[in-house]
Every structure is written in C-alpha cells, then in structure tokens.
Image 1 (spheres, rainbow, N blue to C red):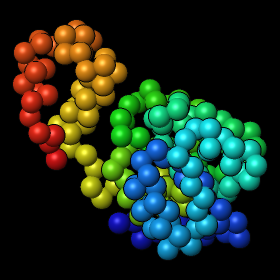
Image 2 (cartoon, helix red, strand yellow):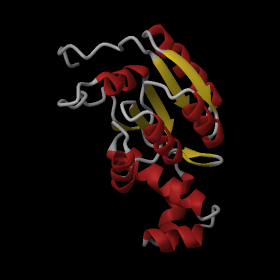
Image 3 (cartoon, rainbow, N blue to C red):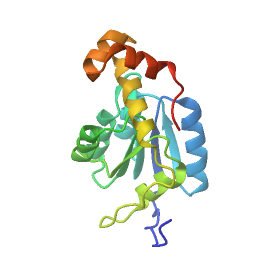
Length: 184
C-alpha cells in the first residue's frame, strides 16, 4: 500500500454515490461514512442529476452503466455545477475508450469493479500530481475477458450467434465459454 499521505477530505465531506445495485450502494455508503464522508445515495441517472443540480457535492462516485442511462451524464452535470468536485467513475466493464471518455468529461479517476472502499477513497483523495496506488486485488486477465464477453452477450440480447459474430469468434467456442463459471 502507498505510505504517502493522501490529502484530507476537507471541510466539505459531501459525497454523491450513484449506482443501481442497491445492496452495493448501501454497503459503500456505510463504508464511506466510516471514513469521514457524508454520503448521499442515488439509484439512477435521473436521481443523480437531480442531486448534482440541487446540492453539488465535493466528491462523487458514479457507476457508468445504470438502468436508465449512462453515468457520464451525471458527471457532466456535476462538472458544470461544481468544477472542483473530485469524481470517480466505477464500472464492471473496464474499457480504454470509456475510461478516456470519463476523464475527458471531467472524472478524476476510473476504477473497475470490484473496487472496495479503500480503492475508492484513495482515488478520491489522491493529490492532483500523483496517481493512486494500484488496486490490491485487480481482476485477472481471464476475468476481464470473461466480463467483456458477458457484456457483449447481454448487449446482443443473449443471442449467441450475433455475439460470436461481433466478437469474431466461432459460435461453439463462445457456447463453451458461456457454459463455464466465471474465472476469479
């Protein structure tokens, strides 16, 4: 772990958490509260944008894929309302293009799920000129591949033939991968 002191939370400890996974949202809110933040939760893009507009927080953790849209919409509203906010974008589907889009819009950092409260706190409080330490338990390459295949499979409405075509892989190979358990 990085022994360099992170910056303090500061006088404004307001934190917006936007995620449609309600159990995860509640656990994260409790964990961040224990670390000194004052979390406010939103379960959708619409709720996140409403809070960002009415009470723009100093910190935000926003899930990228929400049931009612894209978390980057919340990032844009928050960046307009509070340019100094520190924003971390979370996603279960890490992709370079999405990370670039999140940072261009104004996110401070980008973390792949599963990210724990320590990783999130480190990213939120990292000083401007240093990167947060790498995660303690990053996903394996096999897990990242499996997550990507699952994402494309879901986007293709669970159509094996269409997913195989888009991934440029044989349909039977894809069926074997989908039949297996997820790698760790």
